[in-house]
Length: 382
Ligand SMILES: *Cc1c(COP(=O)(O)O)cnc(C)c1O
Image (cartoon, rainbow, N blue to C red; front, side):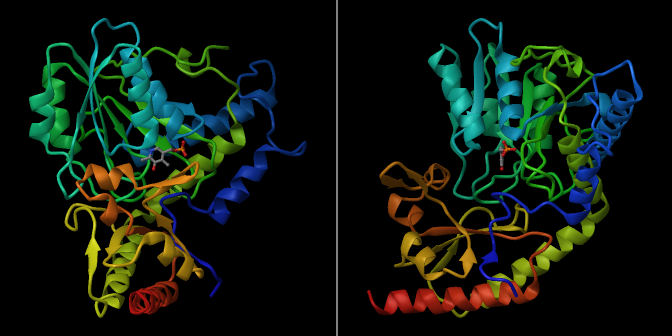
């Protein structure tokens, strides 16, 4: 077993070796290195064929039409394009989002707010979930867009997107969903979810970093304004030479996610159960966020009487993430944990453990034993 044990799959995943093998084909002089936008020779046509094949693979995982997929540099850019692109040119626009969205959504909405857009920030319940009625109650005649995540990246809880979407559709309000943590972790089907825009990332699904996609619905037709102008690539929605190797890698990763979805989900359920069972002997452990509506691979726990920073120092053989983001000198407790009503003190006691395709039962047994050891030791010296 390699140490430290990697338990931060929600931050990023390693590239699957089969994905890396695919990517290398599009780089070197003996490979398909052409510019996919070159229309005058085979180098370009072959690269374009690779891009279109990957577009089909990404579309397939979410049951979309390939023409609904716009390549971006990652879910951060997809979130920016969706939100700014939907609001652009609308007077008196009103946007609804939540207090526990990813920073890419939170900061984009804050920026819009600074430019005069009215934003309603919904607060989830202690389970980390936004209820459909909260969204409907916040709707106004001038509401242009609702942006909510499908799976929360710190808590793993799942939003009832289908119920919210059908009401928004009937009211003619655009619906953007950040699904960066959902793709490959639970079934995602845009034909069953009345949403308009969906953000995806390569590197949360065993693909490369620096590539993502925005799903833009064609029927009914959704219009967004481009945020990056240039050669008019991606039907004018996102200019810039397409990174063939990144795109081919994301395509392969999404095809594998589709083929492995049931196995991946079952594997993670088993690991989750084993991990939590391993901690059963330890009192004073609280699971943050919903235990019922969640993906199995993300587990956020608070430990009574132990702060996360000391615990992480003690858990040197585990690579995990605290709910806290280090902002310059001060350690700020996670805005997501505060957003579900945790006090600063409780938020400072939380750690996120996230597992993935390559996590083994042995690693999980080691991790839970380590946690029991270190927490017990830290509590004893208090
Ligand atoms: C990781 C993540 C992002 C950002 O994706 P990048 O591809 O790294 O830009 C956005 N939203 C959520 C929910 C994420 O987990």
